[in-house]
Length: 107
Length: 107
DNA sequence: AAGTCATATAACCATTTGGTTATACCAGAA
DNA sequence: TTCTGGTATAACCAAATGGTTATATGACTT
Figure 1: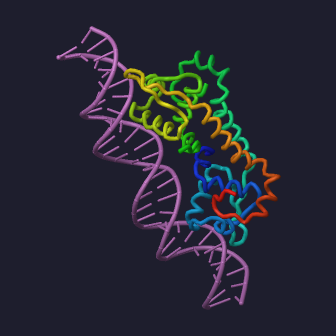
Figure 2: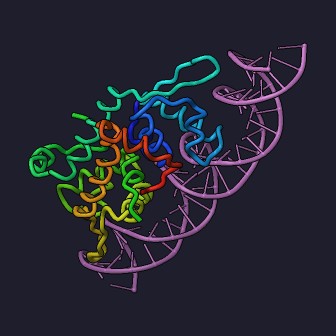
Figure 3: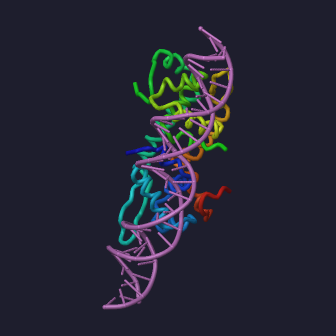
């Protein structure tokens, strides 16, 4: 799975991504940097792992997290296409006019 | 309020934004273009209004919706700064290193 | 072997989300 | 005035979200 929209919907997760963009961090190092509990933070990490935007590795008794930069970049570029397209919609007007699409069809 | 992250988290809402980027639409015209019920769609519209990304106006017995392009643009630019920053984090590494920040502090 | 610290997991909770159906309301048309 | 189509709202539901506390597990340290 990779739903970047879900991943970035929460401010704590955005902060995690920002931190991991600069460094690898241990779970406890991350917990230190937030005010929420360890299990709460762990849940956010699990979501980011599930969405394949960060990776987790074992190192002794530690869990080290790192940003999956390549996938993050890919997914973010897709987001930019979709959301950016809302703004510069000039060319798209004709396209839409020609299609009588329903729901989230991709064509 | 304006939480663009919340607004774009749902695919139906993204589709609504895309549609409204090209045209104004009546609620019923929008409903036609989806497979969900009128009250379900109305809830999505309410969220987009709440987040100030679209506007609603009465026109006889119709409700016409339009994109609030300016605010959308502003909010999207903020998103790009925050999320884009995760990718080009070179300059930010020093900044972060100097600050021992906690949670989502803004400084 | 016992202690300690990092992590994992379970159980719980309140709120939000995304949908439904049924029904009320309201404005223009017949 | 009644009919009709567009919109609003209420009541309900299941699942997801974001948090908690308590406790278990696991791996170095002493």
